Length: 92
Image (cartoon, rainbow, N blue to C red; front, side, top):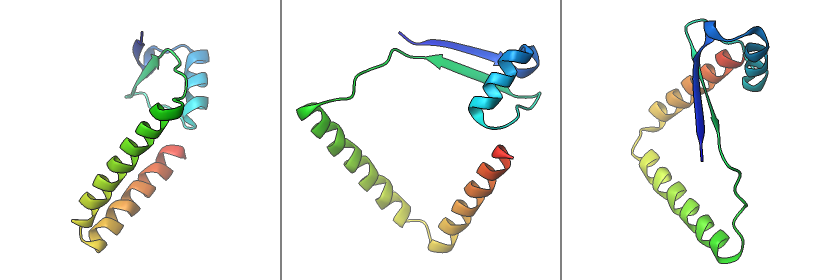
């Protein structure tokens, strides 16, 4: 069963904040909230179950790829650049 906790950053203790920042690899902003979910670990699928999961993943990726083809190349490049810039800012 999943347990979920959501906290406002200003309400975190120093130790909790440092631990979360270490996990995220960046500093937390005062206006942010942090959500933590604890899930029961599941075993990796084996045999037929694994084959079916891989096929479902391949199909999902194929559909995503088809959707991306509808986006003009220059627009797609801009979206990728924007995502990379955002990721770099969050890490720094």
